[in-house]
Length: 627
Image (cartoon, rainbow, N blue to C red; front, side, top):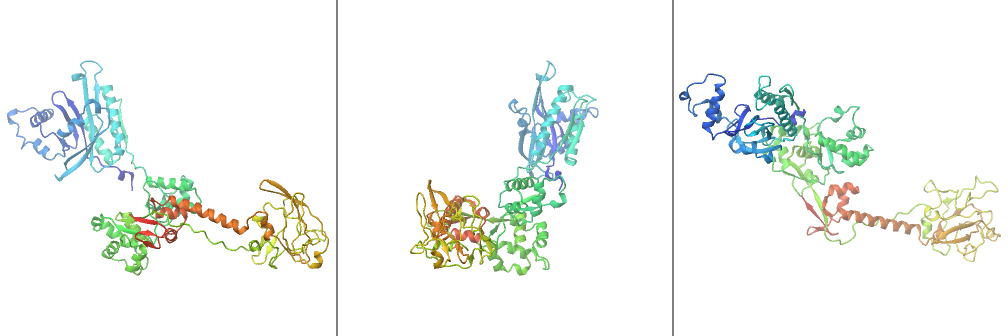
């Protein structure tokens, strides 16, 4: 794929001027049968005879052949364009001088059939620097390029402008156009070389008058690439690895490794560990240079349908020869084109790829469904039928709050009542085997700092004190004495400002409970902006068992760990639902929503309540538009 393959071919060039006697005329043209004035036969005959007299002696006017038998008559019959309807735009009024003018006109092709052409020029008018230089003191001219109507002419716009600018400079310096001399390069020769070089080499270099020269080079013009979205899937049209070198952008080099026709843009960014915005920009560059194309995410829940262009492409030899080899898996015979075309015709709106595979036993034919679909999209005769969700009426919440799972450790203790009676959990223990005689199981380096560790046998992992209940709580120091128990087994606490009752768990015997207790340090914490000093008195237990948590650890905060988790889950569900509702306005299709929230179509279908549809609307008030 060379750059010149993107450039249109030049059908022809002609140079037109304003003649003081005849008006606008075509003075030179390449090729010779490009354009002719069919209405002024007499004036054209005289002009033609004058041009012939330059090459041979004049003959008697009575011996001129008639127009129908003259070379001019034969010349006009083969002309592609008629100059008469174009003349007022080729040599226009002064308001259009110095502007790029493009015309669309009809004419004949080489087979004398009707055809359309585009003519691009840059009309100029030059005023005489002194009297007598030009007739009427003005010289009007235009160098025009002729193209087929279907051509994209953006690449030639700077070429046409530069030609007009250089010729204007040559006219100003040496009267190159109005009074050519033998030292100048003849303008017909310039036109011929422009025609040949631009079509063959896309560049040219032509000296004009010793002061000016035409130095032209065509560059392929690529249209602005379309927007690249996270849910688009890039397909490489060339071997990117073969074109990779050390000068490539780092992100581009990493991203291109994961282009396989399956991964979408967001997933490629994750696999390449690249920024999503930079990844999208890289793919826009690749789209600009036409080395990749974007398709939809392939899912078995997708729906596709044929385009009307299939009636023409079904007989295309290129498609017929490429399709079977592209869509057939290894080890299977290649199906005939009529079979493949029949399968394409069965892809219709309302029928998912999964249903289509099951109904027509596609896998038994050795056809890869993903490549089968992508071939039709690449060739342009298959299109995706997207689902566009719209919330019509909100009948019930879209996002359900998930049921909280039980946590190992202190969650179960939050379920205990405030009476102080707790179920024993011998699997949770505090290991005192490594402590010295004078060391306590819980020690504080600084107020508010805890260094002890609980180990749960069930989870076989080290856990700190319950983070939700102990984040702002300073645990008391444990001494070798049991707490003084009240009549219901509740340890008594005393403080300078207030008294609270807490229920630490202990395996201490009744005898130990009667031992006098010793006060530990006072802990200070703020509740609702006020400061409360509380003194907790505890002692080490005979069995070494200590079970912090319980209702005493959560009573201070007014909410248990489970309640806080449930409140957090409800808040998350509400925020997620608000974000989802923003995408249910009918302008976002299912692929965008799925990639945004990381759901499959099956999950999204249940969330939107589309698994139960009645009268075109799901049970949660969401409808889907297919287009």
